[in-house]
Figure (cartoon, rainbow, N blue to C red):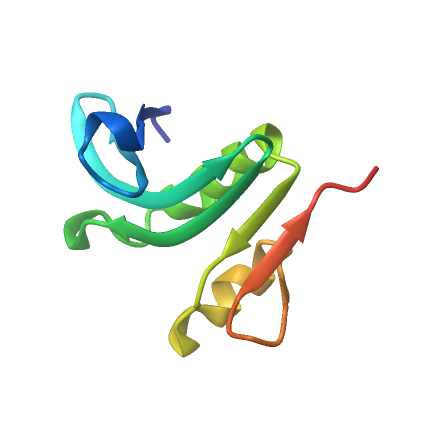
Length: 105
């Protein structure tokens, strides 16, 4: 599988209340992530892998990269159809529709 690259577009540059990240595979944009970064914590509000690139492991690779970068990751208001993905990635339900991963000390 070709190496993914991630480009952070901080909220101040996008006139947005969110941090956006482009996901590229080579020269091709395969998706975008919308979230909020606070120091070593990340809240993911949405991962959008474009339909023609779904099921290639791009979201999984993005989450693995985030785990190396952040100490705490929250997946905000997870859709019922996506709970299995977050559980496979090592996240646990918080009880309010969110799933959380924390780096072990």
